[in-house]
Length: 487
Ligand SMILES: [Zn+2]
Ligand SMILES: [Zn+2]
Image (cartoon, rainbow, N blue to C red; front, side):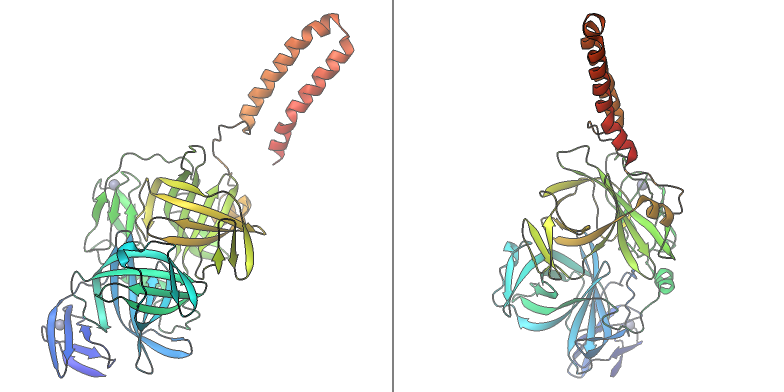
């Protein structure tokens, strides 16, 4: 441990690790560079946004049987949101990184230059990268800016520090190719959960909510900077808001809420539940809906569905999806499938089969808070697979891929979660002939036609057989209606 006085304000600055190059003064945000035996102030760095992360400086844990302590962090901002890179120090003095993005965690270690990396400009999701005999797939390609720093760090990050990174996955392995310097570097590790890391000294949910955010006076209520309507907002938990009144996209990751974009009126069609609705799930009553998105398949106006982002102060995020086929409980996969193709996916050695042909979906409505930037008009390509009622979905855009798993829920269970008497789904207008109302019209028309055709028979012909066929045809036409009602 090395203590020194901040060259700018005189407060004590700690260097716990011998390999840390800089430390950020807690009081004045000066970046203090340790160089031989001298310390220099090399300029200020932004304050980090206190977000939903339960990790803090001092949190300890174990990765691959080695103990570590969190000593610093940088916060990175890219066009769709914000994530944390926690700098950790292992007991043997080596440094490492614990990335924390929307409640997903990855530990990586710097293993040196990435010699065979494709140039950043040519990198795209799905590109292959070979490392140590394994084939990795690029899943994220992003350019980010360092917006805040805290504690100790292994290299100099000034204001405006730009990171160019490509994340890659191979089953339970994870690696990042970092193109921020002239020669790309390789960070190799695994996706992890905080439980697997056996983390100690985490912040609990109350501490998170008390300290979250840095927007002055905006801990509970924030007025939309565009229209002034109150925004349902849990400071820091999610930084990207969409105003339900005027549909402006509002960014809350900086010192003040700023309008990123204004949108034309967007109509809400499908969602049964609303932002702010709270739920008791498995006896746990801290869940609430913080964001709502409606989507439809591109080229099919009748295909809408809704996705709800739920947050729990101790358990983080989960998704609830409402479709015309019913409700689904969905979560983002921490560990990715071992292999996937057009027709099947292998996850944990189990094969899932293609459910539908790939389709594109467009966001038609959004409201509430998200941890990435949601825009009406955003298009994502979906591929869905199924095994024994469990669905896997791959969602891809030009810059990233995500996998999620979902399981069907009964209407009764969803109603019970949200304390409602009943929830009726689907409440979608299909416009197709399988709508009972339309069927009714069709069958009445058909019956009228049957009668018209049969009138001569009824009057002049073999009266009995004409009546028999008319009655039989009428009964057959009513059949689908009965099935529909019995659903
Ligand atoms: Zn200072
Ligand atoms: Zn507004």
